[in-house]
Each structure stands twice: as structure tokens, then as C-alpha cells.
Amino acid sequence: MKLCWLDIRNVNGAREAIIEEAVHQRVDAVVAADPADLETLPPTVKKVLFPQNLPLPEKLTPADLVIVEPGRHGEPAELAQQHPDVEFGRFVEIADADSLEEACRAARHDGWSLLYFRDPTKIPLEIVLAAAAGSNGSIITQVADVEEAEIVFGVLEHGSEGVMLAPRTVGEATELKAAAVSRAADLDLVELEVTGIRRVGMGERACVDTCTNFGLDEGILVGSHSTGMILCCSETHPLPYMPTRPFRVNAGALHSYTLSADGRTNYLSELRSGGRVLAVDAKGKSRIVTVGRVKIETRPLLAIDAVAPSGVKVNLIVQDDWHVRVLGPGGTVLNVTELTEGTKVLGCLPVEQRHVGYPIDEFCIEK
Image 1 (tube, rainbow, N blue to C red):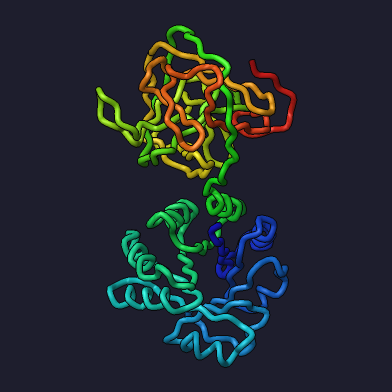
Image 2: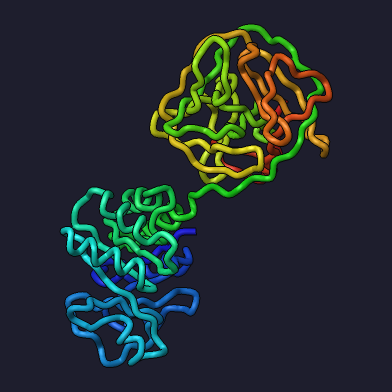
């Protein structure tokens, strides 16, 4: 999980409400320029002192970590010897080649590096992350808003260990925390037993084209009901009449549910360019991918009925064509037109009912 630091040094309006929200959302650290601003924080929050452009206070407590400017305050390692009860980290503003090299050294050798990149390009951050590969320190990147935080979290796929954000309004701490935990949780997949397949006539099916190539045993979960979905395979495997399209899943009829970020469901018909959908592999490992396009076209349809060991019935309606595939145990690739009674397929059984896509505990029957 990514670290969220909230910078309250220049917060004026609604300061107390913003701090209360930060504590409630369990942000990882609150950053202040005055030790007094850290005194009332609970022990669940890391107290970070960052006296930027100011002298180092004589009394550092109750700070857990002090971020220093070495040219003004001294080297973190030397300060740590003078104050053994406090951690020290280094602040670097990256504006040119020399400061970029300083940031790389800090990322390799310091326990904490707080970095501010003056230019909007993320290339310098990529260089720092590459330089820090294998080191034990933590890189915190200063960001302007939650949108930039989401980008920083994904740079070079693993991103910074955390970000520091100066909130402007109440609510931003909540948004930042949501962005930090939006890395999808892995799912518990189950083996479903096919009980029948049947042709159901013509209808519209959706191909979901993403901005990411899927793995060989990866696809998206799709089902007619929110309580049961089948793992539909991406087009990563060769076909005789067309090239592979490893970014695509021929997913199912447009009414079908699929999982997206934060455990929410969407209808396939709702997915749009720039939206998000959950990619899942045969072991249940999941990740959020960006939708590039959704193609909805009229095709003959095939209904797949299956049942879980618990007795939950699952239905999936897909295009009636042998090149449409689902995944079985161990990532076995199964053509939908060749499924028979007793065939095992992989699926997921969300336990909650849904209201506008969100999980909710209420009475609901889906047929």
C-alpha cells in the first residue's frame, strides 16, 4: 500500500477539519513546519517535521521524522547521531542534472527522501526510481493534487513509496487515501461446473479493448448476475484467421456485469474510453487497467450456465463463436462453443447485492 503524507504547513481555512479528516482516514503521516502542530496528533499518525526555508528548531519532539535541507540544516546521517531518538530524511528539489543526481544518491543511501520535481515531466522520477532499485530507503514525491498522485503511484509500474499532498479543502485526504489503495485486491476464484450451454438468438455483445496487454492466463470477470461471474479470456492466444489482440477481451452481452475499481460493478455497456476495469488472472491476482475502447456489435449469442460448489448459479452470455474463450483451472483456455456439462471454468462469487454498481447488503433476487 502506498504512503499518504498530508502537508498542513500552509493550510489555513478548515485546518482542524482537514486534520481530523486525515486522522479518520488513517493517512500515514502529517507534515508540519512547527513541532507544536504535531503535539495533538494521535500515535497512529507519523509526525513529520519539515522546516523548509527555516532554521532547525532546538526541540524536535514530538516529531518522529525530520526532513532537512542539507545545505541549511546539515547532513541527515550527522543529525541522526546528534538526535538518536528521531529519524532524518533529505529534501531535494529537482530542477537540473545536478539536483537529479543528488536525488538519485539520496534514494540509494538515505532512509527517507522527499522529492519535489519542478518540471511536470515524470522522466526524472523514472530515473530516480531506477537508480533506487534494490535500496531500502523510501521515496516520497511531492504532488500538486490527487490526479498527479495517481500518476506518481504508477510510474515505472511500482511508483514512489508515497506522496506528500498539501490539501486545499476538506475531502482531499479521503480522495488521496482512495487513490493510494486503488491497487486492486486479489480475488478468491472458485471452480464452477458448467451445467449447460444454449443458443439464445441475436443480441449485442461488447469487446473491451484496454490500454494494456493482458497476460496469457488473464482476462476480466463477466456475468449476467452480480453474484456470479466467469473469467473471460483475453485474445492473447493465436487464432487461425486473425492476429492476436492481447489488449482485448471479447467479454459478453452488453447487459453483463464486470468488476472495476474499489469492488464496484459496471455494465459492459457503461464502460467508456478512459474508464477502469479489473484484470484478473487464473490465480486471482488482479490489477486495474484503463479502457481504451468498447466495441458493441450485433452477433449470435450463447448462454453458459454453471454452478458453484456452494450451489450459487452463474450465467454468462457471450458471442456464439469458437474463438471466444473462457479460462479453466490452471489457466486452461476453453473455447465457449466446446463447453459441455461438467466442464470446469474459473469464476468469482461476489457476496453483496448491488445498487448502482456499489455493494450493498439488501434483499435482491436476480434471475
